[in-house]
Amino acid sequence: METCFLTFILVSSFAVHSSQSDITDWDDVVVVREGSSTTLVCTYEMSRSPVTLNWMRKSLGAIEWKLVLSASKRKTFSGGASKSSMRLTDPNFHDTGVFSLFFIPTMEDIGLYSCLIKQQERKLKERLIFLAILTVTVLPSPIISVHSTLRMNAMVTPDTAINNITWTSPHGITIKSEKISSRETEAKLPMVQDTDKGVYVCTVHPWGKSSSPIFPFNVNVNITANNGPWYTQAKHVPTDDKSFTATVVQRPLLLKCPGVRGDMVVLQWRPPDKGNNERKVVMQYDRWRGTTHREQPSRRVQLAGPPFNAEAGIFAFRLTPELSDGGLYICEVHLDDKITLQSTTVSVMKVQTKRSSSKLDLICLYSERSQVKSVKWNHQNHNRQPQMSANRPGQILTTVPLPITSDTAGNYTCTLKLNNGQTIWATQAVTLPPEVGKDEHVDVTAPSMLPSLSALLLLVPLVAAAVGVLLWRQKQISDRDIEYSLSVQSGEVENIYENPDDIRQGPALDSVYMDLKPRGEDDVYKELER
Picture 1 (cartoon, rainbow, N blue to C red):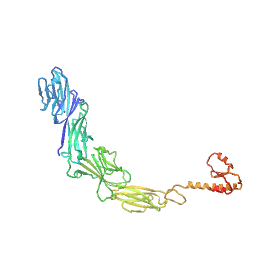
Picture 2: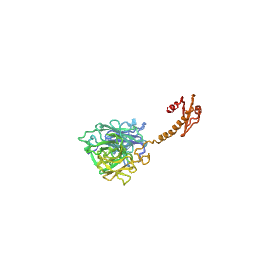
Picture 3: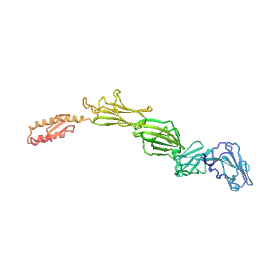
Picture 4: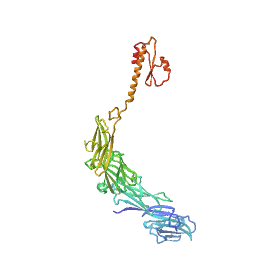
């Protein structure tokens, strides 16, 4: 397939002495397209005295200068380095002071150009101008089809006067570009659509002095519809590195991708334990556009961090799975129009409990059963082997009778083993609750009732003492009102005062006072009952 390219001319002018071989400074930078006319500008403020003009060129790597054009007021003649298109822009340069050289350059014209103005043998001015070539290659060629990868390379020869090169899309958006060598810059757009066609702008940014800060050039890109499904036409490069692994729910797992640097990555997923091969796109990341697309938004799948670097095209994914996230994962790395594949089959295990009035069920669940060799429960006491049952595929159950005893308590471990020998496990602790009475066990930890019972037991002697005092005082009741006070402190009963006012004047400590005001014999009991 032939390469379709556009070639541009980069003209750099340098203000250094002509005898210097290393160029360290310049006066101007001009960028033109190859095959288009360009002008190397050289001017000088003229005096009335006649001058002589010499345009010379030194090719890259050459030592000697070759004459391009020589002119004076009386005559003009061409030298050995001249081309048919070369001429002075102003034949009356001796009057106007414009000594600029016009021509249509090609790749062979790369080199240093010297504009030397003399008056007799005295040098009035010398201006060095460096001519370089910018080549732009657009691929694929000759046809750029939908879903292919658009590649635009720009190369400067030599690159001395160039700072960088940037690309802009037809929509005015700056496209990411990378230097692939000291002279070449690359920009890509994977999976192009018909909307990506149009005029792209390649902009050269000169380094150092320049009359213009940028030099933009238009590059037209046409995109055509392909004749069939692009995915079947793309070149697939499968790898032999097929992984089989297992993990526990919510434990991060690394999903590896092919070890090639790519433009875009696509992660596809086939759900676990399905009879068909239907796949779903979990995530798609385009490092050139900087965009991420998810068919099914989920934070459980993320691009992996260091040592991987998605922005640089080194891909991997980090999965924090739930039980239903097992299955087959296929990582596709797209580089140009090649797709490299790597698959990872994942089994996920989860342990959960189910309680009833008479038993505690320990359930071990697992997905993607196709690669599971065995699943079993074990007790920390190796002499005690739990009884297991399987009510349905992907589930192993063992039952602990209630109440829990010292024999049934302990750590129960569910162990899953894959066909490739990998083993994972999860542990469920079954503990004895705090003892309530001797030889009595419960399987549920409940809030303690001891503080409330203690308080009730303390009230019994207090109430009995109060009744005794009231009965003793009943015999001394007269027609006048008598106030009784009862003070209870620290579980002891004391009849401290007969005058309630003395009680009210005392400090409010931790005592409890009861003022009874009987009006008759029966009123004492009524008041106590109240």
